[in-house]
Image (cartoon, rainbow, N blue to C red; front, side, top):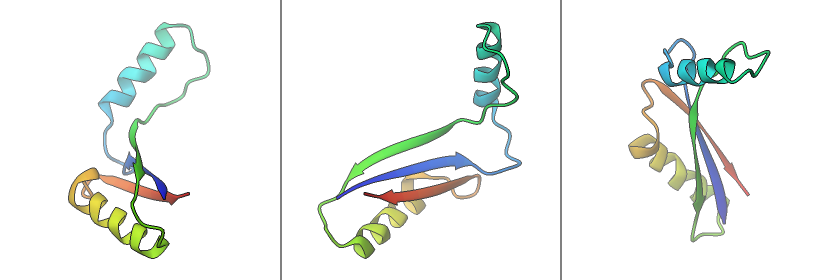
Length: 79
């Protein structure tokens, strides 16, 4: 079973890396950029076929390591 975990900063948390990317895009002549927020994507292969078990494992992984839940949100997609 495959899954994708997307981690993004919560609204209101400053994103200096996103601002740097926004500035770089503008300096490269990319027009129409009003804001950039960066995040992380994890593609994970699981050794289970039980969707509920997979969701529980991924939630635990996010809570313990993949996301800083004080400042980040995460979303789990199982394929």
